[in-house]
Amino acid sequence: QVQLVESGGGLVQPGGSLRLSCAASGSSISIYRMNWYRQAPGTRRELVAHITAGSITNYVDSVKGRFTISRDNAKNTVYLQMNSLKPEDTAVYYCNAIDAGIVIAWGQGTQVTVST
Image: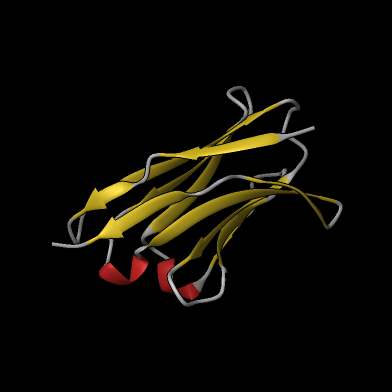
């Protein structure tokens, strides 16, 4: 059974950068599609980026060119590098793991706040 733990969130000024980590335990995530979601107060959870087992990536339009998702299977970890952050990126960021179209695990989330 996979457990996911996000870290790396915090308070950053507009234009700044953060790198989020999603560390997995209990099982290897190398064969899973991994997603990063975010949810701002009063909004629906939004898929931000995903990476397949073969490291094919995709992003929501609002973060293209600014965010990069990557995976390190040796460390059983997925990352989200976030550059040129904007106030509208403020949200709780979550990762999850997908196996054959089924969500098998969610993390607890990490808060990202972009503000002066």
